[in-house]
Amino acid sequence: MPTGKKIRVLVVDDSILFRTVLSKGLTSDLNIEVVATAGDPYEARDKIIEFQPDVMTCDVQMPKMDGIEFIRRLLPQYNLPVIVVSSVSGVVFDALDAGAVDFVAKPDVNSVRSVEDFINEMIDKVKIASKAKVLCNTKGKVTKKITGRVDSFVSKIIAIGASTGGTDAIYKILKALPEDVPGIVIVQHIPPVFSRMFAERLNNTTMLNVKEAKSGDFIEKGQVLIAPGNRHMKIVKMNEKYKVHCFEGEKINGHCPSVDILFESVAREAGSDAIGVILTGMGYDGAKGLLAMRRKGARTIGQDEKSSVVYGMPKAAFNIGAVEKQTPLNNIAQLIYKMLS
Image 1 (cartoon, rainbow, N blue to C red):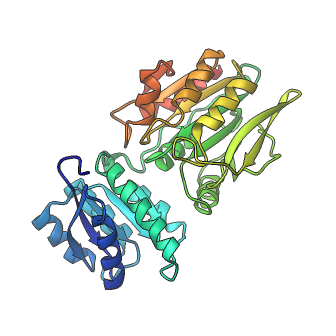
Image 2 (spheres, one colour):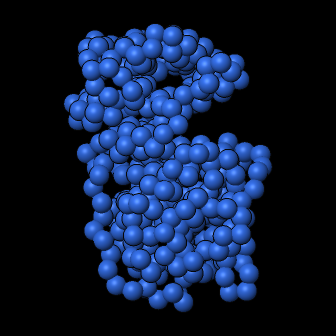
């Protein structure tokens, strides 16, 4: 049943076939209305002015102007939530840096199942994007790099969970942390393959050693392990060290990997030797796990509403008392450092 005012969507893609498939798929949901389509950025600009959509889906490879440049020019003027639709490529992270709120990989058009999964994901993403804040004015701005050394005996592990808007938030935090920071484990809601690309991008743009996690990896100082996009990740203590275990499983809170799975294992295995951080994202994944961490003596941090693209996960955690300190994104790295000192 419809839940009130429909979400007005503009579909931008140079393929007539793909525009038609996506438009029909989105409008199969009673809460979504595709008000217009466009074949290139210039046509899209005119349609934005005419139809004033709530959300825009945008291809990356288009004639006259690529999608990333279009997003970069568009958002300062129209403040419109954009979902990027792209083939499997690291270019989606350039689009997120430019201001897009989320992305979806293009389906195999020869596979009915692939197209159906794509449409279902797009419907979910459109609904999330309609509630998201466009923070294009903060994209690319990085917290000042923290200098100094961390006492590694005070806290031995940092766990971070994020969803929509999380790739940019995680980058800003990691970019600011010192190279000798204790080991970091991260669950970002992200599809398979893209999780590896995300890890490689962070490895190339920060001073920390970042990789997609695999079972048996030890959590070392100065290293960041990103959960694979189709596997849960938990930590296990071995003597005085921690390692990760990645495994297939049912979705928890609608996600695999799940932040709750990670946080609950950190609470169980690390207790007070941990810091938990919950960042921007829709839903409540991670709230119960962060509460478990806090009850075991861990320090906990939640991103505040103003700096969150979607204040869902941090809000859920805050409302149940899981968040010890709530702070803007640009203060989180400094707060982690203070908690370690």
